[in-house]
Length: 103
Image (cartoon, rainbow, N blue to C red; front, side, top):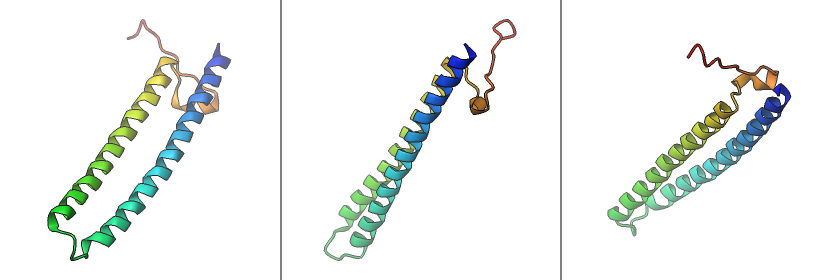
């Protein structure tokens, strides 16, 4: 049974690493896009202030939602680890054991 938990822990860790790397790449692309848009519109006299406010609001909203999404996914990865009662150090081969009688 311990071996199955180790395999599940490795699968969960693998999926989390894939998500983290993909998310970081997406975040970097969005941050670079934000910088390009900001630089291109902030000094342009043809763009009205209301448009600048909308673009700033839109970029802030994306950042906020991106942060919320990351938090949501991280929470659910932790819930998956809890479902299988896997400790963070599962890579080292140790599994967290819970005792229902002491809770």
